[in-house]
Image (cartoon, rainbow, N blue to C red; front, top):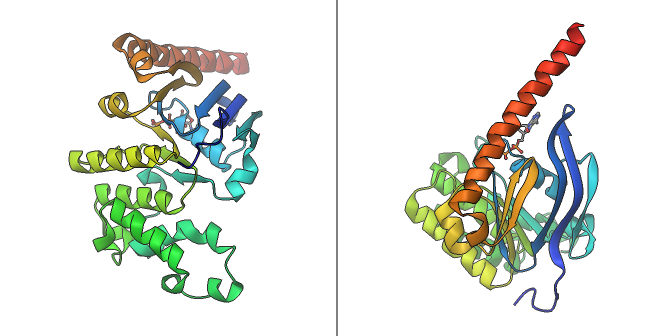
Length: 274
Ligand SMILES: Nc1ncnc2c1ncn2[C@@H]1O[C@H](COP(=O)(O)OP(=O)(O)OP(=O)(O)O)[C@@H](O)[C@H]1O
């Protein structure tokens, strides 16, 4: 087990996080902990701030305020060590870029290759050390995409693209997997395959955090659920958080949030016109 000796430290802990785009708050007063070795689902309506939270966790966006730790330590060190793998939404990727499936997944190994001798780093991707090739082969095989290794990524179907993105995250062999909607837009065999792969990763001790709108999948597989809509709206077991009444409260929070944002904007416009 990867994390068996780590006690109760959270894999990631978020303390007092605030984030905004053009002064419009998106995340406020976020306090969260993703338990080590557990599978967490982040659930919230469109525009709730879920992807923004991931952008902050991966370091691609700076929050206005707040502190983030990984394994009880500054998160930046763990990012640099490649301990956190991230799977973006399919829409966030440039699929026209002329790169093969193999090379896309191999790019997850670049962080590890930094420790290889320089002469080896200069060789083409296919001549890298055996353990890198093995990690890529295993990840592609886990998502049943090894037969597509030489295809350009732009020639894949939507579900295949999703599997390649997951393979890329797996090939990093990170301790934490952050997955933004890994189940969105895939057919049901692909969905089952992805859930089974993640179940095995969790059993091997990896910490998984995934954004999902798939309630049946989350109810069946995850250990921990976070409800979010700008603020944290609940955190607990799937039984507690994914009950009809909790999900109804979350939906109502979304309507109230939009109404209050609308009123604030109208107020601001009225003030400027005075
Ligand atoms: N680059 C940006 N500039 C300005 N506003 C943004 C930007 N990115 C996101 N937003 C806004 O921030 C809010 C939160 O967006 P975010 O993508 O984090 O939500 P989400 O919960 O991931 O939504 P979805 O489920 O639709 O993917 C939305 O209102 C969105 O329009």
